[in-house]
Length: 310
Length: 296
Image (tube, one colour):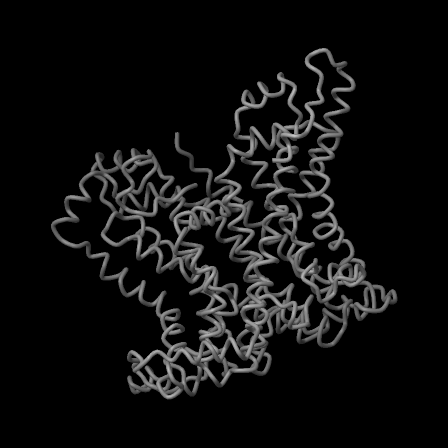
């Protein structure tokens, strides 16, 4: 341990107040400066820098030229941008409610004391530690139109073969299915933690008052889960607006751009078309949208979660 | 927030599940709960993709075409040796380990220092700085990555492991998490040490940090998972296969072997082994850590 060799400098008792205060300021700044410098350099500065980049004509390797609001004007007129925004919206509107609606009853079931519940929990949580690339490879196989087991099962059942990731009409839905599988465990963990924080005596009181299990859930537990739901709503929405990795490892934005969501469009602009200014402009708009979504949802859930245990 | 992983362990703490009312265990011993009818198929659906991955990784190419799948006739280890021969999977795993362990170490040190100062030292500008750090939690990575790439290039870190490590050495989440826990430690504990003349650093290392082992471990687990599974940043920061993490390497492996499914699955299994091992050994702890992230 490094600290044991450090001399204990502060004199016992009789140190003048002012130098003590100064020492505190210096200690404070000394302690926070490594983290604050790193976070400032890689978390704060890049935001301003991206904002500045969005007014530039730049390929990100050579110095750019000032372009005014041209990139934003281009973005607003770009049909690809609007398509991408629509796809991100469709994805979010499907993924977020689906994950939450599935997670809540699963969390309630996994909160019961039944035999083997530990194994059930592990089964639900294990996709969470499966990396996105591994998930993508596995689903590329499962949903493979020629050799995949899902189509083989459909064939056995006498149903028509599907294209999944290779069908422009289905690829986005296949992505929803894959990501719900991957994220379900996270939502279940959040709900489970909230359920286990419900005081046992509240439920006992409800039972004593002749309240059935279902009614107790509806009127006691469900309101207490509002903060967890609010958190999940914000967290899952933010993540689905930033969808990229899952697309890259499965469809690469295709087929026929059917899965080119906002961040994939940004990636294409920055690293395929080398239009850094445009990509930065997309990033800035995304930031504003995420900020707005977060603030609106926080305001809404704050009102919803005003129910308190007294 | 903590989660009781085993149903039976719910005897102790005051916060426990609704069914923990003393009647459940007796009923359980008489007849199995009808919930198994839902939970069993559900668990199978959740695990099936991963079981399939393992099954495929030891099958021959011909066996992969069978449906419904049966057990393979023998274990085809050649898929594994083939995957290891075709791609530097072990090297990529090593790169990922270097990157993740460095980021975990950086976060533990820097976030402890900053978290402690923000919680306990009253210094000029501390509140404004802390709010600024918190604000970065809302910033999407996509707006940060382009300037970060320019900086990394300017610093000559292009295509090095340093490009993957340096920007992730300290995170706003880590600072926030540790600060929250430092504020819960009773002040009396450090005041005694202060009166004895111990320095701030000494108090942090010898008094505070030993009290926070579970929280530090939580930050370590979350940082490890985050950096281990990171994809977009390595994708744009690294092109040289020598410096790829296992996720990025596996993606290039997929591009090269997307017709040889057994070999591809063998590579995928290898890439997942460390994290799966961690999960099975410390799943209770892992679940508790993820629940803590939800506090955010």
